[in-house]
Amino acid sequence: KREWPDWRPPAEMLQRRPDLPRYMAGGPDNPLGARAMYLGGSLYRIHGSNEPETIGQAVSSGCIRMTNDDVMDLYDRVKVGTKVVVLR
Image (cartoon, rainbow, N blue to C red; front, side, top):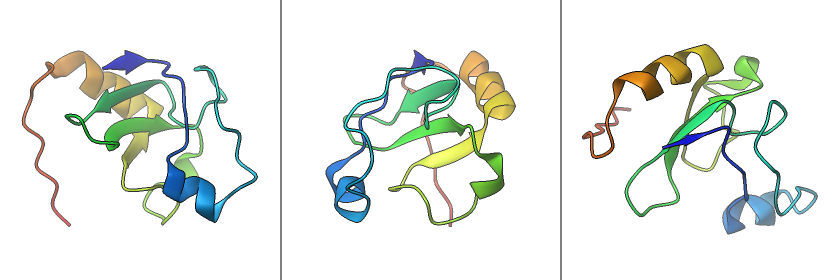
């Protein structure tokens, strides 16, 4: 779990978008938004978004994105190790 996490785009995202920065410090302009919860040892996470209008669109690399308000609420309520079930 991280508050205002730093962001390093994964390799597959950089292949699609070579113009992206290789690193971005956490903060209000960061694509991971206000909070991130990392899922095990994978690259996947549940995180906020500073572009809520894009939620539900194919703009991420497998992450689950939420509004910053919703992800901050979830972050406060879940513990590390909580089981995550993804339905599609």
